[in-house]
Length: 281
Image (spheres, helix red, strand yellow):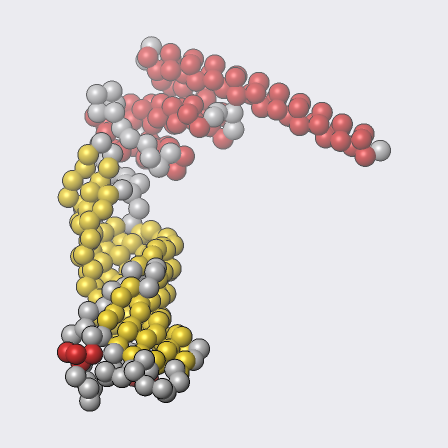
């Protein structure tokens, strides 16, 4: 019984596929006839010939050609409203459709210029890696930090992940808001005196709120080059000093180590960042 059902379903889909192929071939013939009628000036016969094939019967390429042809017919008949509806239908089928200024009539070009298929807003997901290399600006300590030889170095890769919302102001300028979660990691080594050394691995997590402006300044062979300029406010979520180790190489005191120290209490609760970049897409 199961085998019988399988055979029936297989036969049904084969017959359906054959029927769709025959219908598509029939509509292709009608499109060729309609284009011939248009060239001969018998435009009043074109809509009735291909209207039924618009909904079903054309593949995408033929549907675009048919809708363009109908738009030209309605423009020739001075039916601007109907021409606008048909062109809008064409752009819904193919938002990337571009006119051919060497082939399309001026009326079609003018009507096309009244519509825009460019995105106004776009939303996406972003992710990436970062490397943190802090620079010591000032210190506050009872010891002499000039002799302490404090070192801050990168500790592998951090990461960022979040959302990206873009407002396409015009063809040259984008305004980008990109809230994301970011984690930064770096190593610290401090010779806190001649007798001891302290080290650990800092991991800091922020919710970043970058606001960026992108300016597209050059196009070359389909690639658009742009520069970015902006700033970011980071809200501190957590700050930990992992694997802290206090060593006493010159004395007999035992080394002290632990799993982590919660350092959020003595970390700034925000991070201000300037953003500058260049790229292409």
